[in-house]
Image (tube, rainbow, N blue to C red; front, side, top):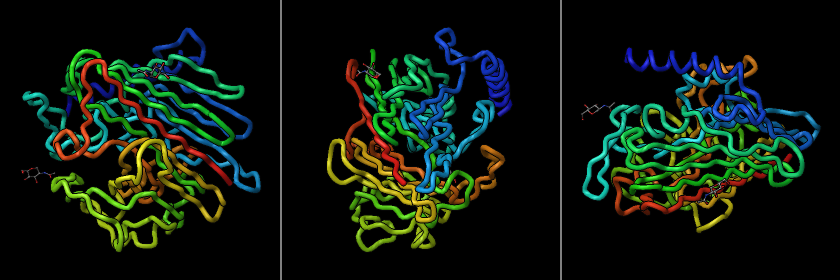
Length: 363
Ligand SMILES: *[C@@H]1O[C@H](CO)[C@@H](O)[C@H](O)[C@H]1NC(C)=O
Ligand SMILES: *[C@@H]1O[C@H](CO)[C@@H](O)[C@H](O)[C@H]1NC(C)=O
């Protein structure tokens, strides 16, 4: 523990130092900085610390702007973030049972940062790594930024070098595309990335999201056990359960009947109906009229309703409490490395993983 704290302290100092020096200019590629994409009254702030989304601002029907993602004011505060506010997680997102798996007859061990298991890549993972800004166009017709990270052989116990890219692009009016890819360079390795943004369409810090209505294009879910692992491998229909969001329902309507792990709330792995780029989720806050529609090309989506948020100091002096935001984490199957019955996430050298998401905001 002491070593870990020292490491964090060192990293913190490094980030504080480089944040002062960072500019959005071409000379500051490996430093930590904040970058804005803007198209009229639609704006997005991201940082290369974890390829994170820091804010997304758009109006309601009366023109009132709100920032609809939870986060922190400064990069330094993200160093100790244990809730994964807005990053890309990887190399293996979500949980790996016992932090262990076998690939091609060899056993791999990862750092256990979630009880006996590994979550979101392990100790540091992609979410606390400094990415390189490859390209950045903040304004114009199609503002975008591309982050690059070379995940090295042995990082978090995983085999082989992997090239990872994430592009955030405003591809249309109030539309944000998130395009991730990963390439195994020299060894076979599992790859599964996800975006861990917490949404609150009433504005971050405006209270809980239980009144938001949600629709999911998912008729099945992977049954998760007390440790939120799909240990049985069972895939079951949502019909007739409080997990069924095939017609729009308030997030809070049945939440008291849902226990995930040991707490009340959704931490549910949905199998998304269909294949390829397709609608996944639609969420709407009745009070403000703000809505989002998510399309993605991934097989599953973890719905997480901020069950563990507990008095966390966020941006603008706001405090985040239980159910203060929800995550729509499109991805591969949870713990696929330990479940041959699930679609494989192993890339052989030269193979490419592609994960596309498109958020369409409206009001
Ligand atoms: C970890 O595994 C041990 C042995 O199986 C068990 O006793 C313990 O409760 C587990 N810890 C957690 C946090 O689940
Ligand atoms: C991954 O994305 C980056 C940035 O968009 C792009 O330059 C690169 O060609 C992509 N890699 C592959 C293998 O598609």
